[in-house]
Amino acid sequence: MTVGLAAVLAFCLALILLNLASVGIALWRTWPRRRPYPTPAPAPGVSIVRPLCGLDNFIEETLSSSFTLDYPNYEVIFCVARANDPVVGVARRLIAQNPRIPAKLIIGDEKVSANPKLNNCVRGWDAAAHGLIALADHNVLMPKDYIQRMLAPFKPDVGLVCSMPLGSHPQNPWAELECAFLNTFEARWQYAAAAAAGGFAQGKNMMWRKEVMERGGGVRALAAEIAEDAASTKLVHAQGLKVALVDSPFEQPLGRRSLRDVWMRQARWARMRRKTFPLFYAPEIFAGAAVPAFAAAYAAHLADFGVAAAALLVAALWHVPELVLAKIAGWHGSWRMPFMLALRDLMLPVMYLDAWFVDDFTWRGTQMSVREERSGAS
Image 1 (cartoon, one colour):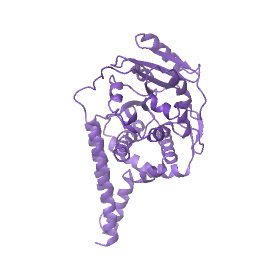
Image 2 (cartoon, helix red, strand yellow):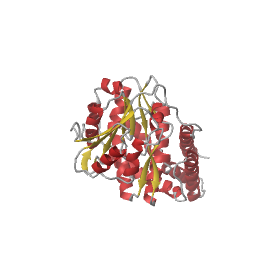
Image 3 (tube, one colour):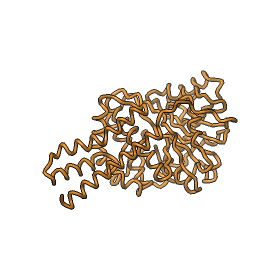
């Protein structure tokens, strides 16, 4: 065996073992619980701020889940930028149908950045009555123990608890492709990053101790970065505190997606990760199966072995543990998922290069750029 062949095989093996380690961490964090999360006594008050914009798939289900939480002391604050947004009628009807839950709708945003979502949250944050505030996107489907699961990771050294989105209810193959990105790729690697580097915020669900945010300059300070979750991570770490993740992510029902939808969303997130944490983004090229499969193919070529067989073997060693993780965790699975995992990993190197060279993107009709110092979206 030549030195070059040995080096390529060692590189390939190291990436496979790293991938298996990330699967193991995710399995440990998402292993199904036998008992529901308990409600602390006394139960601290929680304000749930949900920025709204437009009528997404499953909007009735996701917003109505705000009112079915098994928790004794919380309020719901819906925020929408424009009075003519069609989601206003949905929010008002749900508030009227659930009078036992303190809830309000705030119309009109405050322009603190180029980020429409952050602008939409500011007045809701200011109106929150409690010392624990959850910023939750409108497309999050909240389980009944949502608050308990967000409260569970809080320790004295934790300033912020987050949950990444978990893709569910896909209604076409491209939505299943998004599940392949969100679930066994992004959620898994975020758990691994938290174990290795202390945790990074994800803007889909963020529960704050209000005093932590205020010490860092308040909610308007999140305009300091292109993404409010990146700004949140830095604000918390600057105080010597950690960002913690829930043990099992909350669902985002997807419905139907187009390939363009999936590409634009994932490319946007990649560009923002590159902008806000470039040193952590740099090794992402090794997070998918494409690089180790190529390395295995090259090693097979050097050894005069079957190139295609070597690449397929590495892909199987990479993707079968992902499928096992999804099965055990109860995440979406179907006969299409092995093909979606392969397609995802073929897209990842292109997306990786795109993130280094492309700065502009469109988010909900707003033209934005990672070149701007005070903007964001997630």
